[in-house]
Length: 299
Image 1 (cartoon, rainbow, N blue to C red):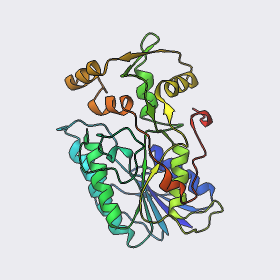
Image 2 (tube, one colour; image 1 turned 60 degrees about the horizontal axis):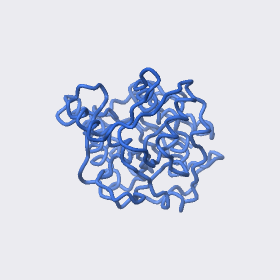
Image 3 (cartoon, one colour; image 1 turned 90 degrees about the horizontal axis):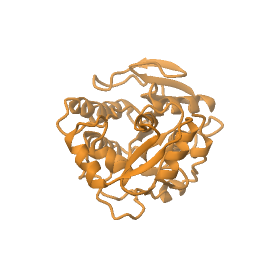
Image 4 (cartoon, rainbow, N blue to C red; image 1 turned 135 degrees about the vertical axis):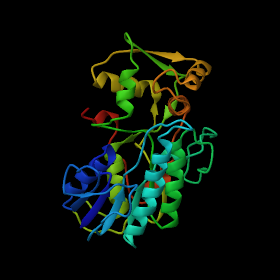
């Protein structure tokens, strides 16, 4: 099997590329920088269609993931990558099976607290350009008949986003977190990679399987976590002991509005202060099972 992985130099794309190679697939890594395995094919998602060559299927991981507030200068590039790049990729795919890695950030954050299913609204309420542009990009992918995966808070070895931001917030043995303890779905990067390959129809033996029917699927670890416990486990895995202090939500939101605290945005506050549990029923119905969790990581 020949598989094209876009964004293969990134955190999620690299994991997908390595997992595909481990199954015996011939991997083409598309992006501005080489991936960890296989053949590198240069592609700037903003510049035009990628060269997919003789690839049998495509996993699209390339994305601009920065948490940019409304009006940020980088928002235009984020749209160019997440929406324009998707359009380029879908035209190049020309009938090949496509797995498009989206995000639970596409969901309208105005929730009821019940587990979120794939039919939850994705057309409004986004707190940053990332959520808006991923929602717009996945609408193109769904219309083209792709399989769209929606992980939440992807973590694991090499994570360039969540864990570094968490460690940076620890000061003098104290970690302030906004609001009270909540329940959250998280996604191990290995679970996401396994779901990508299963959805694409790449079997564990390296052959071609049926893949998943087109549509959207939530992807997360088997069970949600209590936020404070998960944070403590991650900190301890990095040799850091810290006392968690619950910062009143109104204070955290007010600080986010000022923009004076680096990395503290409305989106960042929302991500860790609101209970979000993804309903995995649809993904489980394919036979997929998330096999990894926080205790299985080699940080």
